[in-house]
Length: 376
Image 1 (cartoon, rainbow, N blue to C red):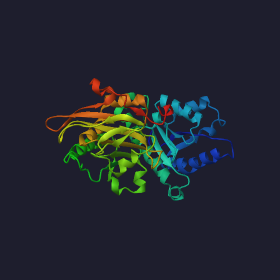
Image 2: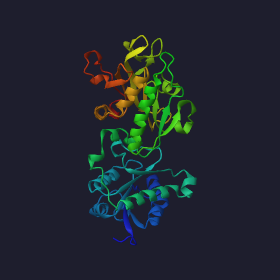
Image 3: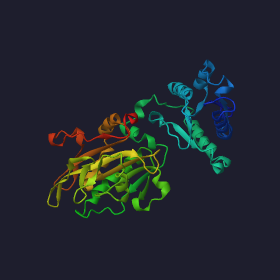
Image 4: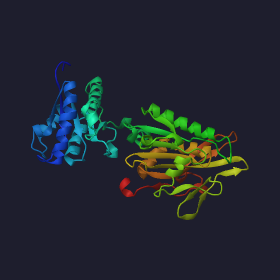
C-alpha cells in the first residue's frame, strides 16, 4: 500500500450501554484522543460498535483485528471482551497500542505493550491534545517498523532480567543514592556500593531504561512517587530506613552497631557479617521488592548491606539471570537475604542468595513473598 493512502485501525474498546458512564468514557477517549491522532497519521479508525452490537464478538471483528494495519486497545476498566480481542491481536502478531487511564495498572504479563497513559480530568493536557500527540508518536514508530510487530508470542526477547524490570519499561525510574555513603564502623567500604550501583545502572541503560539519579535527602514528592531503585550503602540512610520499616516486611537492620540483619518476631534470627578485627570475611545484604509506600501503584526495589560488599551483592542478584528466574516463581514482591565472600584483595566474590547456597551452614529459608498468594 502506498503511503498516500489511508491506513486502517481497529479500536478495541469497552462500549457499555448508551448513556452509561462506561460509554461516556469510551466515547471521550475515541473522539478526543484516538480519532485526532489517527487523522494526523492518515489512519482511518473504526471502533467495534460500528460493525457489531455492543457486547458481541463477531467474525467481522476478527477480520478487522487480523487485517487492519494496527489495533488501538482501551484497557481501562479491564473489560473481559477487550482482553479476549487483545489476545486475538497478539496471536495474529498485529501491531497494538494500549491506552490506559492514569492510575490504573496493566496486568504483569502484558506490561510490555506499547502504552499511552491519559487522564480525562487533566483539562490542560486534553485541550493541548497531549495524549493524542503521544499516541501519534507510537503510531509513527509502528510506521517506521513497516507496520509490523513481533508480538508477545515471540518470547526470545523475554530474558529473565527484562521480565523482572518489565514494569519499568514505559515509566520513569529513579535511582536513589545514599547521601553520605560512609560507614562509621569500617571506613572505605562505600566503593563497593558505588561499583554495584554503576554495574546495575549501566545494565538497565543497555536494556533501554533511562533512569534518573537522585540522593535520598534531596528528593521531592513527585520523585518519590515513581518506580524506585534505592541504594542503602553500608548502613541504611534515611530513605532506606523508612522503606525497611514498613510493617509488611520481615527483615531490617539491628544489633548494637546496626549491622546485624534481624527478622521481626523471631528473636533467634540474627545474621552478622563475619569479621576478623577490621577485616570483613563475609558480608550480607537485604534485597527487597515492595510496593512503593509513597505511591502503591509503583514498585520500590531496595538494596542495602551490612557493609558495602553486602550492598554490592544485593545489586548483583538483580543482574544474575538464574536468580531472577527463580525469583519469578516466588512472586513480584519479596524480601531475600544474600551473601558474598570478601577475598584477600578486599573484593566481594561468590554472591549467593542464601536459600540456594551450597554451604550447609548458610542454608536457611530466607526468601519471604510479600502481600500473599494473590501477588504470585
